[in-house]
Amino acid sequence: MEDSGYIGDPDRISVLDGVAEALQSLAAAGYERVVITNQSGVARGLYRDCDVERVHAELQARLRARGADVEAFYYCSHLEGCDCRKPDVGLVRRAVLDRDLSLADCVVFGDRESDMRLAERLRIPGVLVNASARYAGPEPALRASRLDEGVRRFLAGDRA
Image (cartoon, rainbow, N blue to C red):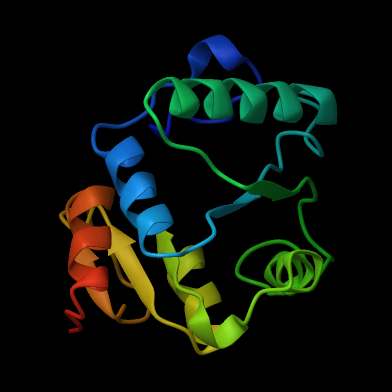
């Protein structure tokens, strides 16, 4: 989604170009698509857990309308002091157990330093999307301007 700050209202969702195609490509390659997200707006009192779930449901509906989907959403609603807030690995570990995934076969696609730190901590590839933006975190496996480009290059075996 386009990053427009704290989003607790499904009407504020804007799906970026190429996202549906990227998810379709990952599905065709046998990857399960799981969203791991920090949602501290809940702890800040800006919106509630049910609002996060409504946003995820709307995002899923918009993706499905374009022939794509996500298998699961995991989110951290805390500000700090937990192991589930990215870049900590708690949510990924939970998803791996819940969904019977092999961590060695996983990859992180993200647009923030916390996403690439998560990949680094898990010792799996990280693909930095929106690579034209200022970035000072750990070096990702790949940099791409859009998600579909990053997925295409990752699936082709391109690595930095």
